[in-house]
Length: 333
Image (cartoon, rainbow, N blue to C red; front, top):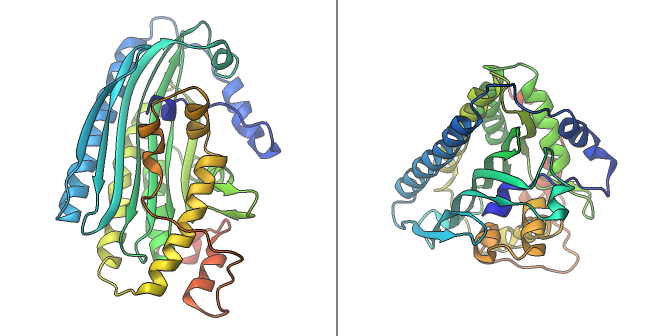
């Protein structure tokens, strides 16, 4: 999992990451006298508490399966706790991981990360939830803190990947995340929504991975509004996602819907293996494979040249695989 919190290596094959790279270059060492050790401990405590809260809520929501908790150690320093729930009533697979790692950066990583020196500290929680019912969307979230020398920053976000989308579900998910943003800075939500739409984009398919959410990185650690926002964003995840599960989980479905769900899961796998920086970095640096690949669904299929029937439920999905302003589309949002 430690490689998932170190997911800040710039991509160089597309111009749309320019804003990310500018944000990284604008990072500065924290102010003289700032308690960076204390902040590191608070960030670590926060992600571990969030993992416990999310696991407890998912177990209660599922009502059948429980998480297997797998503690692991990293040879270079630190370790983590991987939580996996499998074959539940609601969730086919759910992974909720934390890590608290430290040590020396390789020369390659030193050239990729902001800050000075070889020493680093990173902590984060990363989760992916794959439901049984095709009418319930998959979701992903990640909240992390990184430190190199006296330079430190927060990152994270959450996004939603439906198979049979409902505009009111997309609006609810965005609304909860927007509320968390707006309480701290009204500029956050539009900026971080656009960042999410850019990041979770499959260039080879020319479509977004889902209906988006928020994504942010390189937020200056000693900015007084950043830590409270980061904690609020983590706390917004369950209220954003759980009501959608409760609303859709009992909808009837058959083999047609299940087959389409497995086909669309292929897009999720494609993104994680081709574009996700945490996954690619971890696999290229001999990271802990079981934790890296916990995000992948247990079953998936690739069918050749699929074209949903015009006007069908399946065909509706394509209209959601582009950036949209769901808060404007749904009255009262």
